[in-house]
Image (cartoon, rainbow, N blue to C red):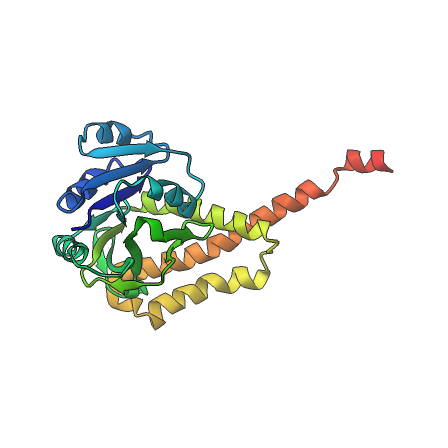
Length: 267
């Protein structure tokens, strides 16, 4: 049977990590935790776990961080999960079965069941969520310069698992706004560096259109109050990326314009 390293990237995950570790222990031959500067007690928790190996480095973005951590896995198969995700018993059994098989597959897509403030979200666009998280260490690399980089398997030989990861996306609104600030700021930085500008029309319609797509076209209304909030926050997230871009555009323009003293000296 092929042996498996479970890789858990984390920062300040004291509230999530213990349950995550408990869920992966039944199938992990190695648990590798890649920390990017925790200050909330996470490191103390890790050091009390004799079956965990800790590596640490500064975080730039998700793809860059994971591409640094993956080659340090001791085993040829790697399962990457976040601290707010859980490997269900059914998924653990399916992964063990697949790794015990003789196969030329180099990676597996895993579906995710997503929860918002403890409520299962079955629609709103989340119903089709899946991620390529189980792969051979030497055949996979994350591609993309943001926090939503995806794995590419060089051979193209990938398959799908049936059992799902459990993903507790946001335990409360504080966690949502922390991620919102990080994700929108970084995306605005990328757009600004590429020369993109925030137009009035984009600021006006991006949020409402994203809400309409999630709430009406993807059935978010079927998720009740939780679905309404998820779709509204999805629209707000789309708007804030552009608002942050507008903020960066303004800052960049102000740095380029000479102040009155500089203008007078130049004259």
